[in-house]
Length: 158
Image 1 (cartoon, rainbow, N blue to C red):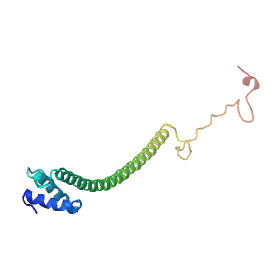
Image 2: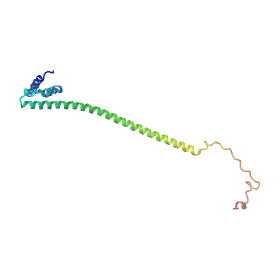
Image 3: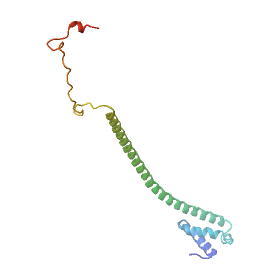
């Protein structure tokens, strides 16, 4: 309900002396503070009442702003809590992803090393070796046979 500064000052005077000033809205308190800046405001109140009314309006306006700030702080705190939960969840996901990558890299490295070792070493089992053709035994000489061993003097020969 905008009006002249004098109308606003009269409304302020009524609320201030009735005790209703404490329940005034922030918008109403802002109007009262603006009206108190008018050059005629000090004449509407007695010499001692004007500074007291100004201080009362200022204190109630400050209280209204603190309540508004508290509402903003509560909203920001709720948003901050949600954001913190998201950051923690993403950090855990990154840690799990890193662990999987590390384990996967370790397994790949192990397989690569084993493959290189298999490529460098000859096969160990006979199942993997190609069949070899039998080599013929050297023919026995007439001086050497199973029934006729070589002479002993030939065996001791240095």
